[in-house]
Image (cartoon, rainbow, N blue to C red; front, side, top):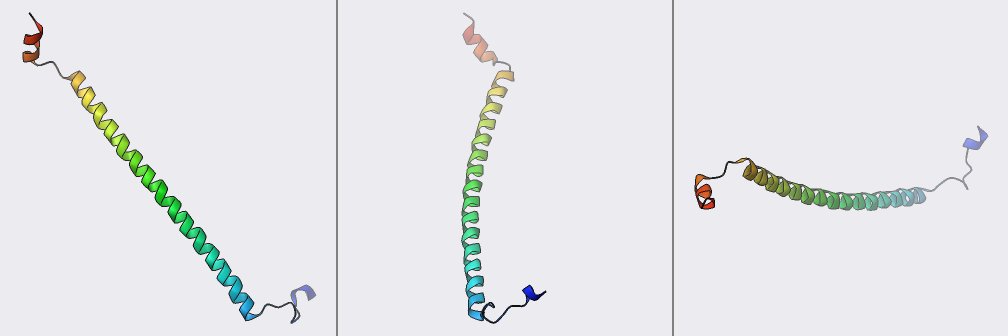
Length: 81
């Protein structure tokens, strides 16, 4: 238990504690801003990909409906001589 007792020379001053806490706060703030920035980029990429996939889905549905619809009688009349 003697190790737990610090002498005056080993103890931190109030100013040193404030500097340490301030440095930790700044580091945390920088990391938080960096993570927020990265998250925004990822969200924008995902939104862009979702829009692209939605457009592709619409095109595929349109193509599928064109294939499954019977041809118009008018078109058949133009095809036969």
